[in-house]
Length: 175
Image (tube, rainbow, N blue to C red; front, side, top):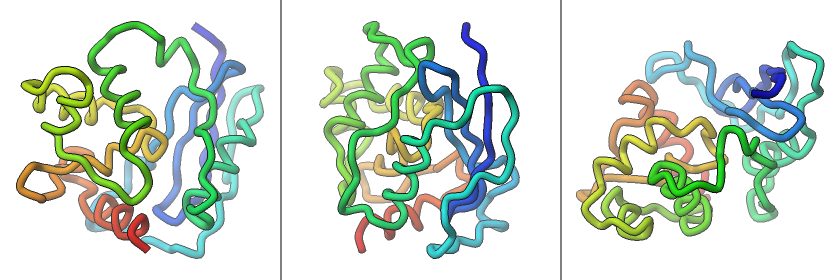
C-alpha cells in the first residue's frame, strides 16, 4: 500500500474528507455527521482546505474539479487521478460498474440500477449495482447519486441517511 494523507475541505454540501497518495485519490466522502437532519447546503460555499494530515499535499486537480462541479459545471473536465491501488484495471464487477457509471452517465443524467447493470454487462445484477454504489469510495467523482430506482424513486443514498443530499445534487445538476 502507499503512504496516504487526508484533508477536510468545505463544499456546498458540507465538509468532505479526501484521502490521497502520490498516485492519486483513495476516497472522497462527506463527513460522517452529515445526515438528512443536519444537512444545510450552501451553494455559495467555496472549496477550501480546512485541515490536512500527512506529508502529501492534496492534488490541485481534485480541488479544481470540485470547484468546477459546484460552481461552473458546464466546464467539467476529466476527474482527478484515482490511485491504481484502490481502483485497478481488473475485471471485478464492482469496479466495472463504477467505470461504466463514470463513463456513461453524465452530469444532469440519471440511470436506474437495472439500466446500469445492463450497461455493465449483466442485466440481472441490479442488486449488485446497489452494492457497488454503497461501496463507492469516490462520492461525486463516481456519481452514485445519479442512480435511481426503476420506479423513479431516488433510493437510499448513504443507506438512506443522506437522501436530502442526493435530492440536492440531482437538483444542482438540473440547473
